[in-house]
Image (cartoon, rainbow, N blue to C red; front, top):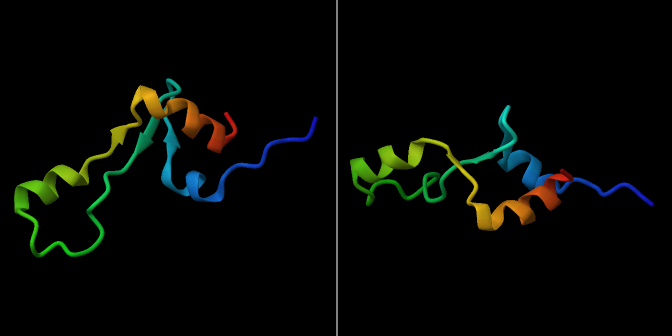
Length: 64
């Protein structure tokens, strides 16, 4: 059976933690920041975890 290639876009966007969870960054924090409030921009800075409903898709893209 051939190996499954890792999705190149996914390997740049996700990191696996030591416990096996997957970290991701928030969307909407790259441009057009002038119309967003300071609070909104501050809350988008922090990384978060991939939701359980998306874990199977992300694991498949990462080859885990």
